[in-house]
Image 1 (cartoon, helix red, strand yellow):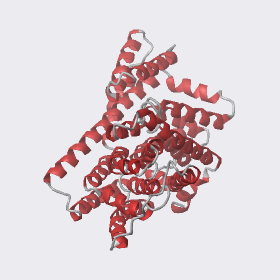
Image 2 (cartoon, rainbow, N blue to C red):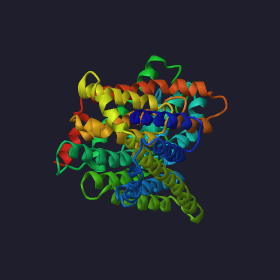
Image 3 (cartoon, helix red, strand yellow):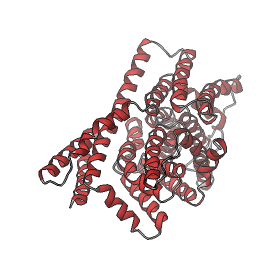
Image 4 (tube, rainbow, N blue to C red):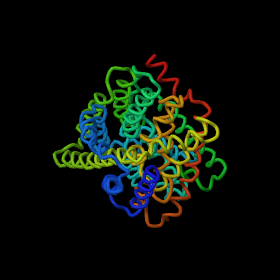
Length: 458
């Protein structure tokens, strides 16, 4: 009976979330209501609620999570400094004369912005405002154009320094320690955000390569949908100098942040502070930083960070009540009874996460689902870095899957009126298929995620 209460609670959260009510309050409110009901029915132990202050203290004292507001600050500051605009102009001039060249330029800029900001909304909105009108003007198919912008804008989910990987790294680390203790290992190995950052480099670059391959193939197969410009403009004087000036600042920032983490010179939190200061320096150098912009950046950073941590607190309460009703034992039983052992369990979890991505945000899935299934999968002997990257790639698709994919909403908000929502949905479908293809490749070749961390941290 208790475990079924856990399932009813999960179902109630799912239904209420569809109403659009704030996630943090849905998680905590539903958990408290079911806890009170359980106390009345004598099916819930109040001691689980007594553990909440310790959970909250652990969140407050978690040094890894300090990286979240710092990375958010860095991304918002770079957006306000118009770094993406300068990059896009330079890349468009470089590739614009090729068939499908604008699509290639947008993808490369999306990759560079992902590696220097890690914020999906800022990249999609910027690309939508700057490149979509130009692509449509040059005769590009609206669906493909929207798909390229949405997909390249979500690369910040998997290419480090990704806020998703920071949050996942903390959750996976806790789950890995819990799994080892359950297996009788009382000196557990640690897994860090740096491990996930290193593990995500090769899959992230491979995803970019698959995107570019798709764009080039479509330009070759259907040249009318990704046309070459009728009149190729000559490159203006000082072209290569402009390319260098546009590329150098974000590349230096990427090197400072990722290089310091992967090289073992700094923790993710320390590297995030370097990134925040570096973003301010770039804004000053571009002449875009003033008191008003700084206030706006800080206000935006506070809002985003508050949202993340409110969801984290709500998820902590939900997790305690879920366990109080024996929900974790029910999940263990369900996953253990699946055919195919750990591979069957892994496939089922990935499928459920993909389906939940149609209606839930990546933060909700990270804080609610991963703490429940993570320890179970890791107890089965699954590599924690591989699991983290697989989940990260899966969560990236949640930004593209209709009807609630956030990248779709971001682009819909800035796209011209003649671009329909149906065209946006149609355009992202091939890129969702590419992400699922990469998930399949990574499932068969885990070394793509585990090799680099093994080499670096050996």
